[in-house]
Length: 294
Ligand SMILES: [Zn+2]
Ligand SMILES: [Zn+2]
Image (cartoon, rainbow, N blue to C red; front, side, top):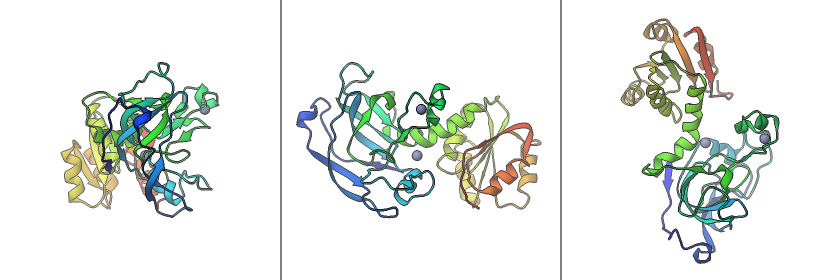
């Protein structure tokens, strides 16, 4: 889901001519309490930060944990807090000029990660996405459910020209998750890739990326005709409903004996139970959907 913010701003007007406050959706109570839409003071960018005027933000399932608790949310809620981690907009002010690789007018993305330490074992191994001390946008610090956000330039994502900005938002979270999952398997063209949970937020992007990697895609999801039509429309070569009693036999038959690459996006235990049964010898099974769903 993508929500557009109304209003406009001269890119060159700078901090002096910005309003003092701007609309934001703020969490103030305990877990389970709803957002309040109000006006908050625009934070000025500090050193190595940029002030971004957001044009769009996505809304992610991760935002539900931030509001209601559970999953990766901190045990004690951080409040007040502005959620959101899939924002795209334009830099309107810089805290440090000429040192950050960005400038006023640049179109940038703001994603889930807002700080990494650069010193822990994960960072030292080049796996900064797993930094033990990372801060998450819209969870540990204010996120993208607001008109303006000051954000570290080290974590801004340059957005190429001529891309429709609303479509950028889900790519910043779901897109990078599913693309990286496919990419890490180093898939060979023309082989079968099974995507479990293929019609969902990650899955539908997974179908497109897998086809762009020249894979044959078998989509698994539930509730029949509507999702089959959707998955095939965006490129899936085959579709199997997970409700079928002969699910494993059907998938094995349609993939000529099993698939080499299996992307499990569903958190249900049954998805993992069956994935091993339609995997070919030496197949890779990528666990993405992780939770306690039964
Ligand atoms: Zn997300
Ligand atoms: Zn680190």
